[in-house]
Length: 222
Image (cartoon, rainbow, N blue to C red; front, side, top):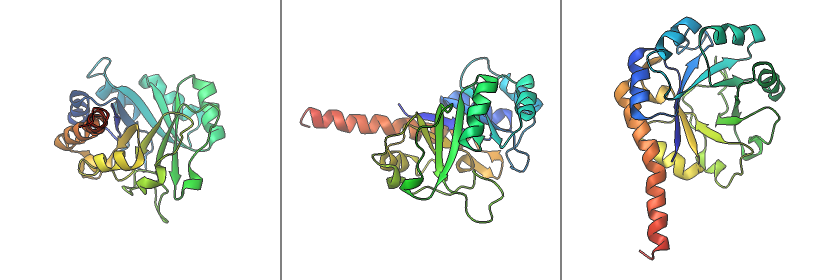
């Protein structure tokens, strides 16, 4: 079944919707320029609403060790999602002993990531447009067929411009095994809509089941 991450959680209603819908991960953004940013204390308060459940992922942009340590002092995380170099990702992996997900913006197949030490997952999205103030979360869809047949070096997530209306097409066109949504389930920048979260998670998790049903019919000659 397709894995789903709901990123940019900032309030209890969004967190509860993601948990209730069966999201695999929830993401907290620790990058102040983002409209989805939270403080470590705010993220901790939200996360305490539910013991267990989805993995907690912290998103960082070129952080120092002290930045990451300050967050981890407030909230236990299951993974660090990094906008930064592969070398920096490996350093964070060694320093904190947590899985590191590296976000990679691509514009052509040649830009798809290869194997890099210290990286446990990659998040693949469209390259940030010129003039963007953030390296990701810009609601720009990737050219999904560009990923078809790609052999990823580690488990990966598709991100960028995904919505409840297009996520099924995106999964089928790209072959994604997991998806990451943020602005596509918002009613305004940084304001998640619980109904859209539930619709997205349902659509994403139904996509692989629909594909498997078709394959089973083909195998049975139906």
